[in-house]
Length: 239
Figure 1 (cartoon, rainbow, N blue to C red):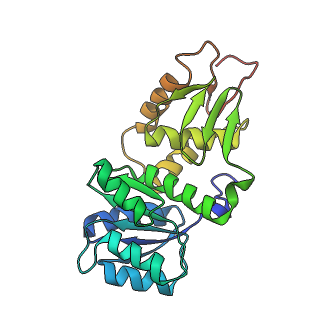
Figure 2 (cartoon, one colour):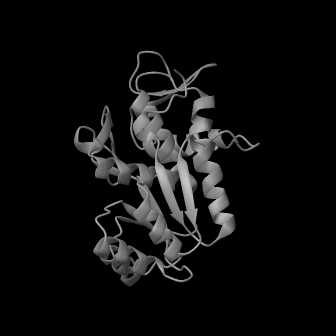
C-alpha cells in the first residue's frame, strides 16, 4: 500500500529537552509520521521516565535543569540495566565535548541546529542496531550506488557522496522501493509528514540529489516517470 510504513520504522521515543519550541517541532514532525513520543523538561524527570518505560531511542539534550544530559546518561548506564540507545543533542561541537558525550554512554551525537529528517534517520539507525534489525540489512545497494544504514554514508563506484539530510532521506526511500516508482506525494510525506511546505522544495531536493548521485557519472540512476513520480536504477527507457 502506498505510503505504508514498516513496523520496524515506528519508534517510541523519549525527548529530554527543556526548549519548549524545539520539543514542539520534534513532536509535530515525528507524530505526523506515526512515532510515539514522551517528553521530559529536565534530567531528573528524564531519568525517571527512561527507567520506568521501554523506549526504542532517547533524544537527550546536553544542557538541562536539575541534572545535565551526560550526568543523567551516566546514572542510567551505571545504576540500571537499561541499554536504550541515546542520541545526545547539543550546541557544543568541540571534539572534547563529543568524546565526553560518548564516554557518558551516548551512541550518537547531533549538533544544533539540525534537520528533523536527519534526526529521524539517525534514530532509526540506532533502533535498528540495538534491536538487531541490521543483521540482515546493513546497507542498500542499487547498481554501483551504496547507502550504509549504519553510518548514513553514501558512495558510488567507491567514491563518497556528500548528501544533505533531506537528499539522503529521498535516496533511502527510492533505494528501498527500487525498481518501483515512488510518487511525489509519498516523498513529500516522508520528508514533511502531513504538512508539506507551500513552495516546491521537493524539486530542489531532487535536483541536488541528481547533482550528487548522477552528475559526476556517465550512467544516470535517478529517473523521472511522467505523471507518476521517481525511481532509481538502470532502465531501457530514456530518463
